Image 1 (cartoon, rainbow, N blue to C red):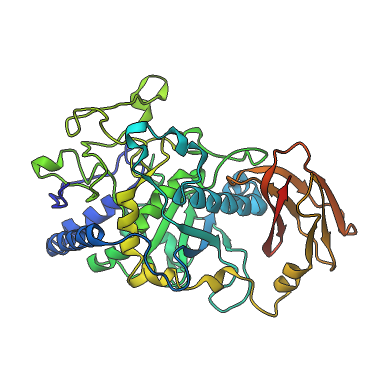
Image 2: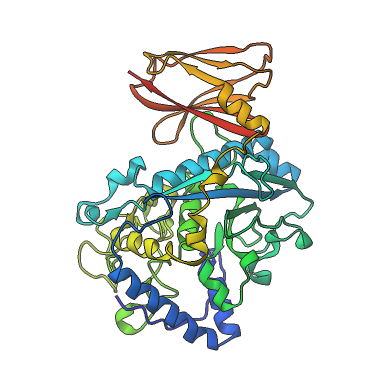
Length: 442
């Protein structure tokens, strides 16, 4: 597939769920010299991906580990829509779980990938975690909440950068060379769910401090089980986060920048195994919101047609569930240099700082017996107690919640016998951090 870009005029509308590439277009329109720079960027990236052997050599492991911090800038009423501070923290935990599933092909709905595309489905071997260390080394739960009187932030004014600075009512980023910064706000433009400034945009006028992604608070995290707070029904599985993080790793929309086919000189995503596609796919365009397979268009007129279930299309959360091998190799290539490589070199930010009370909590949380037939105990040997205990299954879904209301109780018994055999995580959610223990039910 060609990667030569014919840059088309773009404007935001209710149809633009993601305006990442519209922000790109704004820069290109403002400075024609950027068009040439961008062409060379994408051609270099494409050639690198074509010759790149999979499984790059990271600092200590073949799996990239990315520390994430969420900057939540919302009015008090919108924070309450998400369930208050504890609800926001749960959203962050669930969003991390979604990213880990989708980027490692452990998402249950990956089984829905149609047979003609099944051999192309890929995991990207990228692990995400909430940062447990702030830039100054002190402890954090990876979520920074700032109540504000600013009702919304524009995705298109000032390059979408207003949420990213305290001077414009937002929150400053943590060191972008060490943390993946994600801002959670109410986006002004109707229908826009998110946008991203990836590292390559620094060559087009953005600064290091503007890197990261912004998600509308309505599609932050996922809805399910007992966590049933505010979410729009079509974007309730956290896939906007998956889509935008993939943009941060330099993947583009599979339909390119505009409408048209690569064979006619129009824009393309530069990935060889994503079929050419004329325009974004929307569930609402089909009866009952169900997209048929195969679905063909003018760019891919023959079966199996376009890959509408790819994370880089515009389908609803329930209809996107795959990355391709080509996309995986492309991302691996990006993770070997610059800011993206730097993000993989700080797994220590995922650990509690040495000598803090959080480390004391870490070693004083006991879960036994393990393995277990279903009856387990969670024991706390100090005076600090978590606010909530969550039991999480292997695909990241919360299957049981226990609110800790009596601080005098040091030993909680959990009856997990109704659950299926397998691996689960016990999350102990403290006011200033999260401790996780793995258990096996047999």
